[in-house]
Structure formats: C-alpha cells, structure tokens
Length: 338
Ligand SMILES: C[C@H](O)CC(=O)C(=O)O
Ligand SMILES: [Mn+2]
Picture 1 (cartoon, rainbow, N blue to C red):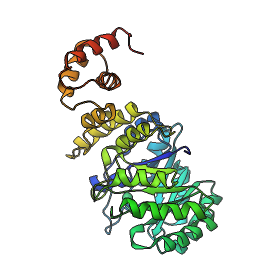
Picture 2 (picture 1 turned 135 degrees about the vertical axis):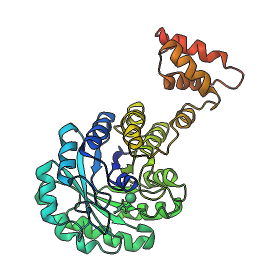
Picture 3 (picture 1 turned 180 degrees about the horizontal axis):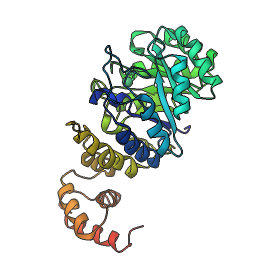
C-alpha cells in the first residue's frame, strides 16, 4: 500500500465549531502539537477560508494574517495550509497569505464547478504553493461527473484532487465508486475529506484508502462543521492497526487533542468529542473495564496508561486477569517490557 499523507483541519474546519474564534495563541499551541505529531498538512483559518470573516459567514475577532503568521512561526515540517474558495477569497488574498507564511492551499469549489478554480490553481502554482483541488459536496454528483471536474483541476496544475464529503452524506460504497474511478483515470494523488453526520467518517476514510486515496483528512477529536470531521486521533490508530505507512505518531496525536486542543476548547466553553480512553482500549484490544485499574496502576508506577493497555492487549489479557494490570505496569516501570 502507498504511503498515506494526513491533513489535519482542526484549526480550519474546526473553526466552525468555535464560530471562527481561534486566536493566534490558540493556533500556535495546536499547530505546534500537530507538527510534532507528524501531521503532513495543517490547515488553518476561518472555516470558510481566506477572507471568510464576513457578515455572511461570521466574523472572526482575529486577523487572518496574524493567525497564519502564528502557525508559520511554530511549524517546522508540516505544510501551513489555507483554504481558498474562489469568490470568497481572491488571488490577492492568497498572495498575502503566502507572505504571512502559508506554503500550501486547497482551492475549493462546488463539485460541479471546478472551472471557477482555474485562475486560482494556476496562480497558486506560480506562487510555488503545494496546490490541492477540493471538490465539495461530492455526494451531489455521480462518479463520472466528479471525474470530469477532477480532470479539470488536474489540467490546471493541481498536485492533489480531493473528493469532499462536505455533508457527511456518502456511504462506503459511494466512496469506493468515486475514488476508484478517480484513481483509474488521474495521474495525480487523490484525497478524501469526510464528515461524520452518518457516523461513517472512519469507515468512509478506510474505503477511500482501499480504493487508492493517499491524502486523508481528519481533525483532532473530530472537531468540525456538523457532526465533525474524521477524528485524526482515531484515524491514526486505525491506520496503525491496518499496517499503513504514514508519518503520524499515535500518542503525540492523542496528546495534541488532550493537552493542546482540549484546554483551548474549554476556554471557549466547548467540549472535545472523541473519547480517547475508549479509543486506546479499542486500539489495544482490551476490555474497556480495564481502564480504571490501568489508570490507578499508571499513577502508582509512573508509567503511561497507554503502554499498560497495549501491553495487556499484546498478552491477550481477558476479564478475570485484572491482577495482571499491576504486574504489567510494574514491569514497564522497570523496563522489563520490550
Ligand atoms: C467551506 C467548507 O467548510 C469546506 C469544507 O470543509 C467542506 O466542504 O467539507
Ligand atoms: Mn469539511
């Protein structure tokens, strides 16, 4: 299987959840954690993209260029990415974003209107940006039409083209059909962006990868418009379990959710959506009832709770073997576990 590249959109699609009020300080904190976790592209800005801060889409209290500068100031290896919807943002806005530190752009249009992105994609390429074509509301067109529009974006010079399930309306079979057709007929990589309205964001992302997509989106704790995006933390766990090659570190991605994003959300009165305790039990393959005992053992022996659960899963521990939790924690503390 080809390497998967992860785009995290907590600080852009997730902005919808906080009415576009991520401050430059919030952005710096979360972007740094995402970069350290190994995420490839970090998308930032107003939920509706460059110059989305209007009466129509909701004003942000922060200057867009300050937000971009804040991310660019802390990100060392990921691409600092902005969204540009032609008609809301312009080529001039993109130039300013580049001066502030943006290194990649996603040019987004309705799925049947790729034509309006021609000027913007070509201009972005001239600016030296990693340029992604982003076909929104992909459920509203059949696979053939999505392909025609994606081909236009490819011909304008896009580096990647995305099938975007903006409404969270697609079923895994729809994803398989659309991504397979794109994969068979395009020379550039294919991406997939999902929303969880039908509870299918992870299943659809898996279907996309199986059909040949290599760029997959997520957001920490699933923060995003509607039911939210595919949770990046869960995505990393699932991709690890599938044995896929990608650049992200599971613990650091989870920590980005709990230690960087959660306090920022709390300060705005919003609670993160993913239950990371449940995630790590599923990842380890242990009973969720082990959690309480493992948490106590973690505190007692000063070892990472996740290491305990993963080791118990490796040993195939089942209910009735709770005494093993202390033993495993003790062994980890003494470096006896490889
Ligand atoms: C403007 C939208 O929020 C872009 C997006 O993330 C989607 O269509 O989904
Ligand atoms: Mn979205």
